Image 1 (cartoon, helix red, strand yellow):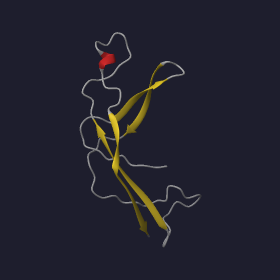
Image 2 (cartoon, rainbow, N blue to C red):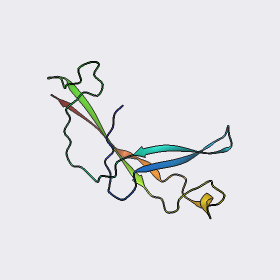
Image 3 (cartoon, helix red, strand yellow):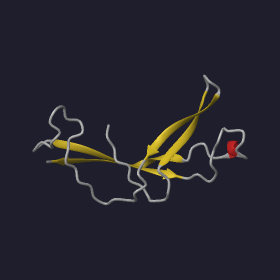
Length: 110
């Protein structure tokens, strides 16, 4: 799946949540968002079919689908498992939160 992260320009380009794994008995980092931190965009130009096999040009009269997913970011204190980081274990383990009701599917026919 190809996706284009578009977010507020705030100096944050990667969001990592930590989830507890019962098997290893520790918190495991999971990268949730990797973005360019370029700011919010209001329009997009699509010129290629990312799922095409062979020729990637858009095909006339073919329907394409797009998805918009909102998310929240809040990291009041950075989480760290490193013993040298003061109060690192008290930090926020889940700074990324996916939106629940603001998921929209768009379609477009060329």
